[in-house]
Image 1 (spheres, rainbow, N blue to C red):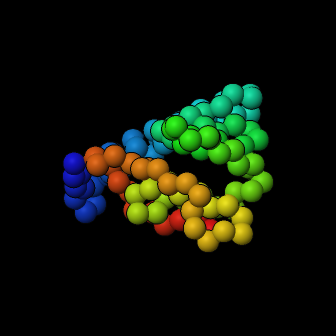
Image 2: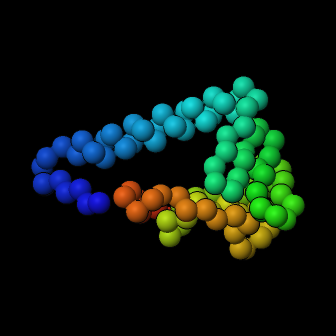
Length: 106
């Protein structure tokens, strides 16, 4: 899906997506603060750890203190462990209809 905005026009679609992302972020933040977990495809996050779901194999639990960075890179949510160069987790960040361009947080 493509969405074009004429020069000088207001970007209502971008504003809507920004509000939606902020609402989802706040909802997740509130859930974690209250002791709940939030989950996505292949992962679960709580206030103490990130659990990477590995299907048939044993899940991997990583302490929050071990995570050095997280960000969007090449349309994937990527997570790095302190002291490691390669990502420890990657998952599709956006579907084909919405793919903002971002670089990883360091």
